[in-house]
Length: 215
Image 1: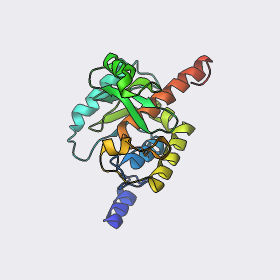
Image 2 (image 1 turned 120 degrees about the horizontal axis):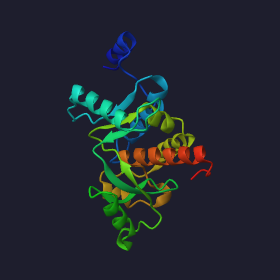
Image 3 (image 1 turned 180 degrees about the horizontal axis):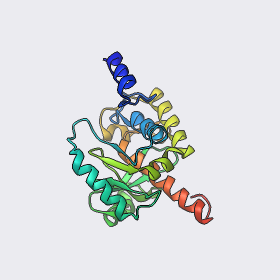
Image 4 (image 1 turned 90 degrees about the vertical axis):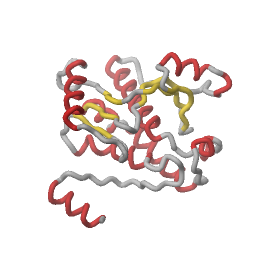
């Protein structure tokens, strides 16, 4: 199968391979692959949008293309609209390589803030809330995808995640993975982690352009 896929990629240029594992030892089995793709795809293609979907999602290509054109127009068009299109939820995230979502859900940003401020959730250090793209479908405009891919700290994030996956204890449920000590915590919230990196890359880009420093 690998040889056939490589042959198709050579002939048609419709496949891209990344240097990342898929079957990693925690419930976020595709987190390494997903991050590696977002870090590399915008650098290797001149596409106007980049989209990631799960293998059990059915995408209507014509409807998606129309939605992306409408989103770009609503964002003002131009050379670099900053657009994320997804079934959005709102999340908080523990920084400093804790690799842990904290607070948030489908109730919108105010609901996420209430969860993050609830002492029972232990989210006092969490950053956010930020809009999280979900696995069903997440698309980013070229400008936003490139901003994220060029962020050195996203690359460092993936390097640390790979090391944690090499040496961390295997865990097959989100609750079991979350119970690991912060120093050995593996990244198992795939989509939340990617969206956290998008959000902080955008925040740093805005801060740099306005001269307010790097958040």
